Length: 380
Image (tube, rainbow, N blue to C red):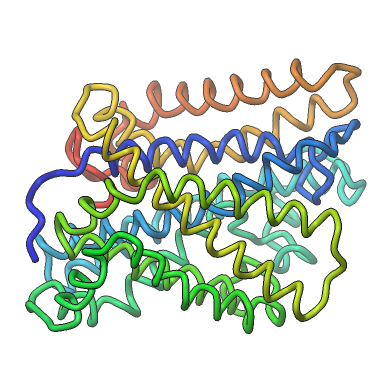
């Protein structure tokens, strides 16, 4: 069951997907859906690439996190693992909620006419009154951290047992996916959740009442662990199925678009759409892993740097995007100009804060999840 060879492709994929998160949040400034600040001109056509990206961007991160957990448990017992998860996820979450997220809420309140005054006045008066959205206390884009900690804590006894024992269950998974087409068996639990749980629980990212999001994401997290536990069996199956998975993903997504544009919602339509959605999600996850394994499974100095930087970038980026967006709202500029400023500004300022401040002051490292030596993955 041991997987000793380092998977640089997983590190690359993690960096790339978190990078796409910046583009996605820039896109949120322009699409019709609600967000913290919105441009004065909305571009309806942008919703299609955004919908495509939205369906698999977070699921693949939960799968990668599950894979990283497999590696982490090879070096730590359950108590050390959960303590490190608490420190790695809990401290940045607390710092984020105290210092990083409040500016986002401030700009939102000012934009909506719910607050007048400086950020200092906001921070020292109402910044920590009540729970968002009625109040101002929130983890906003950092919701991924408490969810990941919850999954690690809840599943760790099972994962430790599976990691340390050559169980019949893992052997069964190995035999199952030796036939590449059977990788789609993993769609079944996702389909049941999408069909029978999703209609009753909106995605809130509030943890307490977010039952569909929790159940769907924890399954994906567990899948990541299982797939890595099969060793080379998973990667060999991916080689055979990557082209088919790409075709299936394309067909599944455009079939969803057809349903959204043409059909009215109903029980049958929901059941069909749910199947297309989970097949689409799982197909693109397989595609991303397959092509990353083929083209990105190699070390580099850029990867070593990016692998450490990605966590602070994730913590910082949305606040920077919202702040820049606030000052662009009323400008009579086109999409390309504003989007370019947001993308370059978010990446650039995140990099400056990380490279010139966080990276150079060791006391700040644990506040932004930096604990590893250079080149070591945050998921190890």
